[in-house]
Image 1 (cartoon, rainbow, N blue to C red):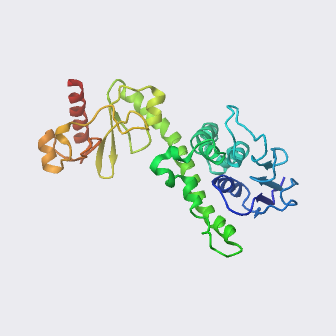
Image 2 (cartoon, one colour):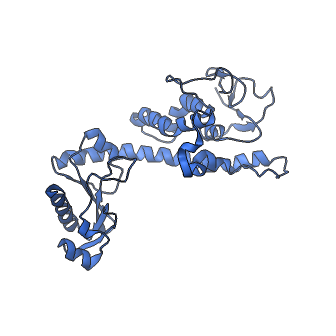
Length: 307
């Protein structure tokens, strides 16, 4: 079926229909996006996808509202917003359109749903309070998109639509970047798993470049790895490994004697020619060669093991 119209509500806009529009306009770039509450427009018909308006949810009829009672629920009984419904029905096609490898689509679909879509669903339905973000609540994506609405005394008759269509490419950039990063993590996972296997029982993991490695460490249950090294431009980096994505605490810190030192002072402190920098927080150090960074890594491991 050819989709000729994407229909959502007029007036003030919210993150859920905005992000739904990101997905649908990518899949149906030739369709006209119409913002209206006109009954004729928000009644299902061939060639239309209606979302966040219309008072019904029917995937076959291509209407995806969540404001009716009872509203649509996930299998775990958490509420859908229009974004969650659109992602459920069109997310996999969207990922394919983003050139995500077929073998990764299902996992990335679920990961994006959990990390990005579900919070939007919960906030839009009032099932999560924005205050959970604490002092960062005004910097969440729904708040930032909301800040692009026209001001109250903008008298232009097209102010809401103008604001919506100006905000749409901004919302698109966040969705595409998030998907791009998820896809990159899956591409990196094979490389990191190979490197973990090569490292064996060594507490030092060497990677061919900087890349996401946390998920592969967890998947391989490589709890013995304390530090990671990789080339970084003309230099090499030695990195600590956070205990989880929710903390800056590390499995092991670099030696306290190196903290904040550079060049000759760091060379003297660690005894490695070519040592160039160690962050004061002891989570990264830099040297001018692979040989030098591996020496620093071995020294860091030795200090940890002596404690």
